[in-house]
Image (cartoon, each protein chain N blue to C red):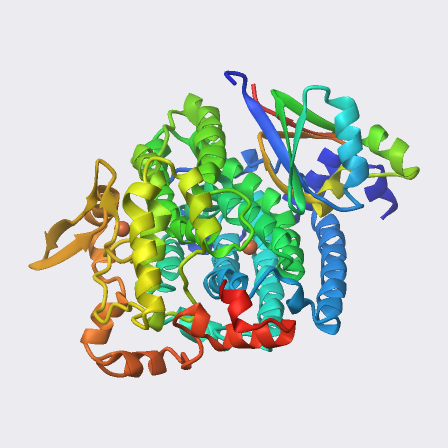
Length: 505
Length: 90
Ligand SMILES: [Fe+2]
Ligand SMILES: [Fe+2]
């Protein structure tokens, strides 16, 4: 210990990571690391791996222990003080339900994935970084589960998140993103998760969402969110580092990596549309619009990230322009979809009130009043007349991103985009050129995607009627549907001493 | 805005306040944007947190790696020693 104190940061890092490795005597490297070359990535010298944070395991344990201590003190206080009553209104909880049911299993998936990369990479620096992240992700899954268990005492829809995750139609969107990465090799996994998701896109998941939680009085989420997010800087840095490392190791790596970046940028962007919908429609007090978030974190910052990599030959992800073209449409189309399928979701949907519609008009001046406001107002009138609209059919999903085929062509905003391709005699459908191209590069893999509506029609989901399927999902009659008529809303009004009219007004 | 920017975001709490003050003192070009629960600090080219500046404010030893307890996100290339934590983009 005495000696460790005298070392400077760099020496300490080298001593406590690189020097932890050993040479193999009776097995070859290829036998020990069988997953290290089948993806085509060529690494000449693993010792060139640099961890910019130079975090060693002893410091890691110290900081993580401190984060945990702080977090659990707050979570305990939360339970004791009925802090669930502090949120702005019960509609907000529905954003949280999506976040917790969609993201918590992803944290666990990331834990598994980094355990895999920590074992599969032959370099000790990459092994240590993967090991830390694997433990971080397990911690994130655990803290979010504690938050679920707090809110599950008071609100519907959170009672069986892992069961729902593996079956439910909209949760298959995050699930398929992660499983695409998890079922690839270690280099593709780390590019998908550390670079594309965490380095390029995660700011959009956490910054507006955690800020939104704070703004809406949700202190439990703020605390688990920021506690998890404090690990994120390290993860993002790993994402950048791993890309630079692969690119510096061999010129043959460039086209492989560019293709992964293109693929997971688009898949991640499709996944984040759901976060955009929360930002625009589900936070009673709004922080920024999806459009503003996309401009700040992708168009400005994302561009700079890719400028950093230009000297290696990396370019902006293919189809990024499409994401910018769609930014005035995306969230409105998604919310209308979830509203229409609200009877088959484990969270509530509603039509925004007039001041919220005005906010959307202001944030989306080009599209909202023209295409979306009239539809929302019409649906509200239908609801008031006792005819709350639900779509009784099953949606057709995009084979790649698994989002219902609801997006339109920004150049022709009332026309939906339908792309299709044929593989081994079967026809496959896509929401976009990007999703189609991803499929066509890996048809054997992508054609096997578990698409919930197909599975229902094949008889694998408990039956052919909606009640059968909801039972198979473990949804109860209180989990979905219109917020105004929900048990959550009735309870909320009772707890807060509000009359239903006050709340509806 | 042709200048290359870096940023970091810190949790808006008491632990991070001396770090924020040290950043403000040592980075005259930094611009702070407040969001609920978190603030984002943008700067052109380079943003540095000096150990000494933070120590002056808290009156005890501070390790630049302690930033891990308050950091929410960052953008830029990291340059870190025992004496400072910096983000750069040139
Ligand atoms: Fe995580
Ligand atoms: Fe798609």
